[in-house]
Image (cartoon, rainbow, N blue to C red; front, side, top):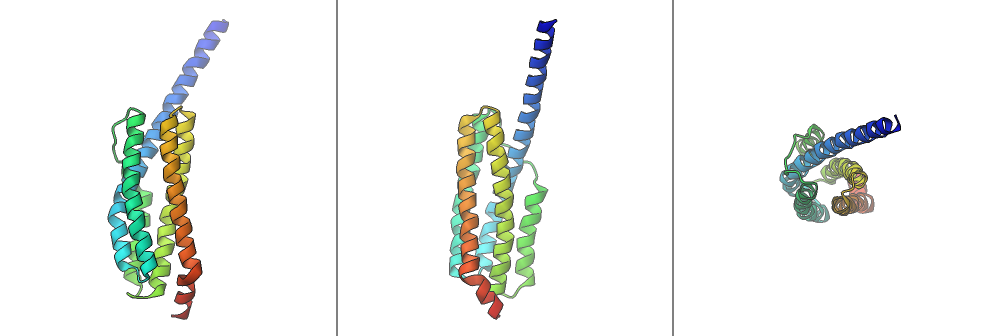
Length: 179
């Protein structure tokens, strides 16, 4: 009887692990789509920005985002899955918000830059939440190398968010107030 209970517990544990892996892979596909679409949006944000520092921040983050796509592809490889993107409505909506800022603000203004920073930080916070969760799940599932890759992306996303905060607080928000 103990053996049956033990076997049943093992089967349940394996089944739960499979479900967790499915959740992990689904979330990975989601962020893969998000990063690929962000690569298309960042040049538009850079072009719309007034501040040279903000333009540079968006351009720099584009380079990082290209690296994130490569790292996410490496994570798929590490876990034995094919890299496949799944439509991410959350990122789609966040990217649309950035476009709405461009359309609803005047070109060449700090108010536009302020709005672009707000939109970009919403994207960063989504990515930070996603990569933090993915890193934790990778660790639980025993994917140590994948967890390291995800941690490195998480650190870059956090740094990008801090850079945007510094730009907003050091100059852009005050300049927007004067307009």
